[in-house]
Image (cartoon, rainbow, N blue to C red; front, side):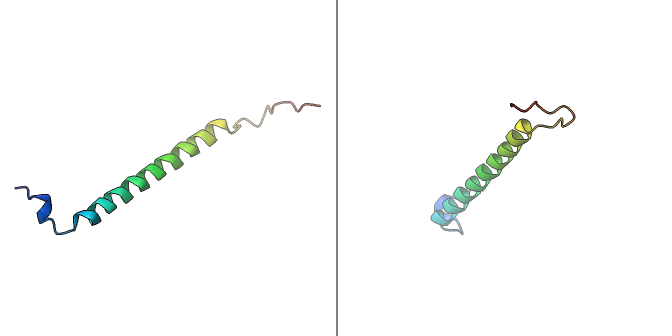
Amino acid sequence: MTRPISDLDVPLPTLQQKVADLVDRQREQRAERSAERLRNFLAPTDQTNPAPKEA
């Protein structure tokens, strides 16, 4: 059922580059989601009782 890698229709370097690009995209998306969660966590959400300003 399985074929050796040398019999692939796509050259191995091309396949390796596509996998590397996919991994990079996934890491970037994960970092963006993490940054968004961190911004939401640090952003003040309750504006009815703002922190007092220092004089």
